[in-house]
Amino acid sequence: MSLSRRQVGLAAVAAVPLTVAASGLASAGPDRRSRTFHIAGDSTAAQKYADAAPETGWGMALPFFLHEDIVVANHAVNGRSSKSFIDEGRLAAILDVIRPGDLLLVQFGHNDEKTADPTRYTEPWTTFQDCLRQYIEGARTRGARPVLATPVERRKFDADGNAVPTHGDYPVSMRALAADEHVALLDIQALSIALWQRLGVEETKKYFNWTATEQDNTHFNPPGAIAVARLVAAGLLHRRVLSPRDVRRLDAEIPESWITWPTA
Image (spheres, rainbow, N blue to C red):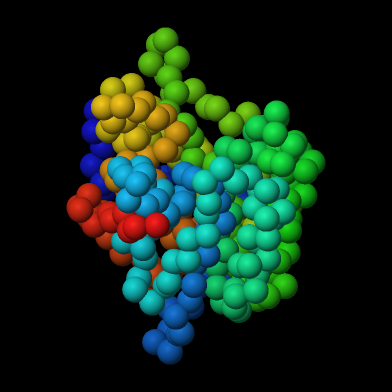
């Protein structure tokens, strides 16, 4: 079953809980300056290049849903966890340039689960939360607004055709931290698994990086990246991180041709 773009947008509004929304609506005044929307995350969000096409990170599609005066700075990098992103100096690089009024969206979990890799692994209820607090505190001390996003769900179904969660305690740990720290939370894990359930086993293949030579149930192709970016944008609006004037095209068809893969 294929969902309309309007159904995807409405699903985001209906499914995100209101309990941990941060207070304050983004300014929509006529004299507002351009703001930067920074993304810290992993390969599911990252910019992809020509040698990886048609693989597409949802961060590549997010600008289609945001007003032109919001600049998207996509710092997400393949293979990184909340820990390795910090250890490599990537959070520090963001904090060097982030300005008051900017936004920092943080989505990790996929690679924090790598128990065999001490450079990336974090434990959900201790080191994962400790790392996430560094993003939160770093943004806040610079006058920017942090936003947490639970990791987008992989494509996995059981024998009965039910979409199966794959991220263990990482999403629930992030939800708890968002509540404790009064940080806006986008529950992309819950929204995406609901979307995969609606689409079903076969239709979801059209959203992931399934090609003649690869069956990738983690990374997206253009339709999948656009669908997840739409969930993110609708969630930002619903959580009052952004105002209605800050978003656009939530109900519109986005041509796949708008996705481009530059040369690295």
